[in-house]
Image (cartoon, one colour):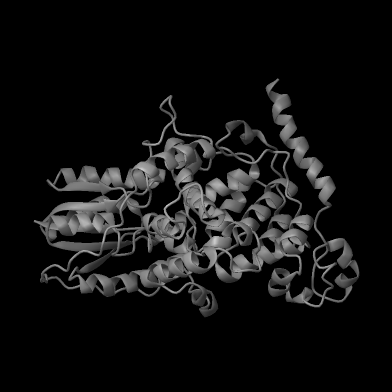
Length: 476
């Protein structure tokens, strides 16, 4: 019988576990579902949707080379998906549906509902591990629980990878042609505005692009990653996160590239490669947390006691943060980078998150939502994990009394102000010694369109510390 691969966040033909399994089992048809209502519910960014469509277009060419027809179906949300998939299986005499697992609560419920609908028609749903190195639940403490501390999780992962490294699957062999035509591909979705051409140019589509980026990073930049990754003005990171989020490249491909560059070493050898491998494992860790503690994908804090924090309702300050008009140059430059490119440098993600959740004492969920609505690499687990880490509400998060100072962080990691000048052109002529500090820019406020600081840093710091201390007092 025919096989169906239901594509989701796995838009590639190389090292695609479900695609390989389906084509090994029999004649294969591919399906992609357009679910705009669900994407809106999940706060998917317009640039992320556009990136999916562009990668889907690139993928369709690769699938055609394999003689795999690509069908496009539309359902407003996931409620209609079980019946839609079941009907499609009847229409095309499908014996098995192959999927690569996704891990949010809604995604798991959707797939369980599809499995139940298929059972009624005699079709099996075959789930595959693909976007992770280890299946959630397979890396546990000695007590049989999901790890809460990253360093302990990493240690177990290193041990297992040193004994058994997951292989990368080759591109499947083309199958015989089927008498089924591929569907036309949408180039836009109503409700999601087309991004600017400048934004699109930052993120060309296709797995060949992703593999080239990975190869160039491994050869040219990985060795210095440990040092350059904190410098936002330099291209010191791989910028592969959008491709990983859309499944245009796999974590196995990334891991193998890093190991090849580091002579097979996981936790020794070149510090840059070791650090980058650890970042891959942080990504893995947060997805395991998502499954082990599903409340974090349902708008809840991991540390439940922090739900009592007295978050402020400050819409004007929130809007200033969102638009990059806080009067703190490094915060504003980072937020404007996000709006213009759909991406933000990782150190700056931590910095702006801490500024919102602690200096402004605005609920971290406001920031999490804003990021998802604008990030081209928006990923529920990584985004939630990062926000809860910065807000000190998550697992293995930064201590509540640790607040990044945006002035010292700016001077340390962008000493010449190159990043600031790029994204804050109104400050381009500022002296290098002054550009980082709003107090030193007081005279400049009168001549350029740049706002004064919206808060006093020492006062805001004390307010945040007091709020967190009150949690302990409430428990005594």
